[in-house]
Amino acid sequence: MDLNLTAAEKQFRDELRAWLESNVPKDWNEWREKPLEESFSYLRAWQRKLYEGGWAAVSWPKEYGGRSATLMEQSIFWEEMARVEAPPMANSLGLGLIGPTIIAYGTEEQKARFIPKILSAEEIWCQGFSEPNAGSDLASLQTEARLEGDHYIVNGQKVWTSYGWIGSWCELVVRTDPTVAKHKGLSVLLIDMKSPGVEVRPLRQMTGESEFNEIFFRDVRVPAKNILGKVNDGWNVAVSTLMYERGSYGARLHLLFKRNINRLIELSHTFHNNGLPAAKDALTRQKLAQCYAEIEIMRWNQLRAFSRITATGVPGPEGSIQKIFWSELNQRVQQIAQEMFGAYGQLLAGDKFAVDNGIWSYGYLRTRGNTIEAGTSEVQRNIIGHFVLGLPRSY
Ligand SMILES: Cc1cc2nc3c(=O)[nH]c(=O)nc-3n(C[C@H](O)[C@H](O)[C@H](O)COP(=O)(O)OP(=O)(O)OC[C@H]3O[C@@H](n4cnc5c(N)ncnc54)[C@H](O)[C@@H]3O)c2cc1C
Image (cartoon, rainbow, N blue to C red; front, side):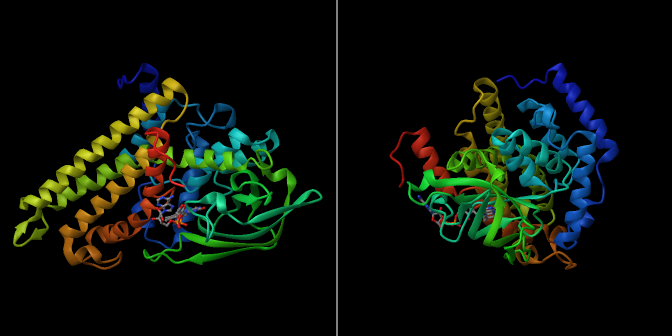
């Protein structure tokens, strides 16, 4: 693994740095406290700017509006975005998971129709996989699509759909053949969320936000040409989306975590536990140092994964390893923050005594979901157990 930047990688970094210097907005911190819809329009405008500069999806092939960036360049991209504290992009599922799946499985017509609007954030995408009785065991899903002439008629319910409230389109996994084994009768449909019969209901989370939703489908007519991949091959298409989801987050999160731990170290000098600055408390020091080391491990693990993909062309088990690692580490970091701040850590944005205007109370609550979203820790361990260690399947 050679981590020295090549001349081309340096050029990529310098070009990006110069662009960010003159384009990154400086007022994101003020906007993040506004209601979800207002801050979302801000993020949409930011993604549009990145798109116009050619930076919205650097990993995508040039022919689809990306830069065909190498994995090292992608890593540079996320490091530079984090360095300048750039806001996130609005269409995160479209860019990170669904766009790449459309590029891999879509027809030319689908790519031409959907890809440009994913990049520009004109159309926001959501991922309709989980159902009330199908989460970890996704293949048990029951939402059905029946072919009638040149349309599918969709009936059923999805749940926990992030961005459902703002989504223009949804990558929906449906059952197209109930007579075969459960993995074999699934297909993926691209559904216009404005279609008659689609009803989106908010789900309120413990953070106070309604970031995700329930979606009900009642006799929704979807043109048959909106199938992604082959009929009854939806399991493979959906698994591709999940691989993108699990593999892609580590690179983006590493620097965010680093920023968080550096801030905690800074605050440990001013917050007092038992009459002493937290920095002088032996246990707090041990925990901060341990998390700092683990954040470094996360970076090396990500680079090892990148290096392996560059060498072999295929993602390895690192996706699951990273997913367990970052989600559980994030919870440990937030736990230390709560221990250090005591009751102040629980105050919300807007309270004058809240630490860093409530980002720690929000962070503590939001990170509970990290070990559930994109596949639970138990499921990731099952994947590693079976596919890496050769242990028997869990089910
Ligand atoms: C913040 C957040 C965002 C999300 N966004 C989306 C989204 O946009 N689209 C979408 O489709 N879904 C989304 N989800 C749903 C998510 O994918 C599911 O919650 C997840 O797959 C787990 O499914 P479940 O909630 O049904 O739990 P279950 O599958 O019922 O699991 C319950 C418990 O049993 C354990 N368990 C289950 N099976 C096994 C097994 N074989 N071995 C060992 N333990 C097992 C689990 O680890 C868990 O602890 C989101 C979830 C969260 C928290």
